Image (cartoon, rainbow, N blue to C red; front, side, top):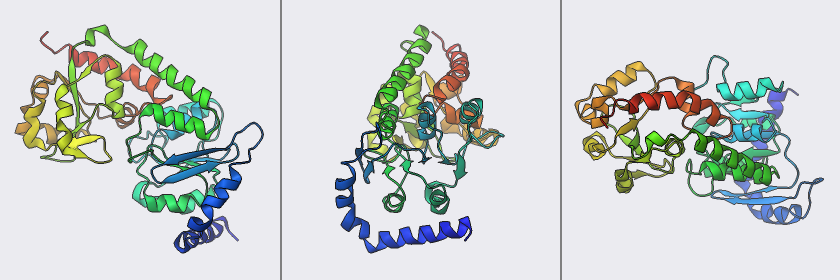
Length: 343
């Protein structure tokens, strides 16, 4: 029997079990039994989350990661995942995010297999990887997907809503799942130190908003807790206070508000605007809109708006691999925008 055939049978069996509700009847009993055991020095752990729970009874060796950021944290903790959801946007010519490719190949390890994710999540590919842990704390995993995945391996999802976990919580929960809580805490402290050392006193008092668009006429604003905003804030810039007043436009699961271009004047007091574009053509289309040009920061050019896809992604995620990679590229762009302010 081929590997592909075995994978299809595996998926069919898992789907059948989920539909029959066998897991719902037996899962609690199984969890109660298995949490009493451990493997070597690994202490069994149960992680509760928004979609259910993950009961990890043995030290994970074959990890699969979904969403963003978990791959990097697992690598930093010493375990290269056997598979990862492909980043739909931002890979370089290697087919991987450059910081992932660099970290793995420099250690002589094997790169993770990549598979389709999001709404097209390739369950069959995950089955064939035979994972013993699936990490998805910063992802858009659905309840239906979780119900299938949890029959393949313990699956760690987000604590409350999709795509809203803080970077610290993401590292901490991965450390908990791997039995490396102290190592994870050390990674958080190291990132805090890197960000603190990169903070610039000349940024004090300068406000910014971090915006996005999904086409002409649209305008979104990320909230302070969103990871890309948190990275900029850590460098010493201040989120424009107006951002907190935009909660009425919040889009659940995005850590942002979709205010529409008609409300662009709400950003009139932002000294800097941070944003990103998929390519130069998209940038020209968005920046050519009259209302967009009326945002003071846009009009005076105090904008940080990269189009290099790996950098856009790297500066949007806080984890042990992206922070040092992104900061050396980010700060010169910020300095350039700050220099245009009339201060």
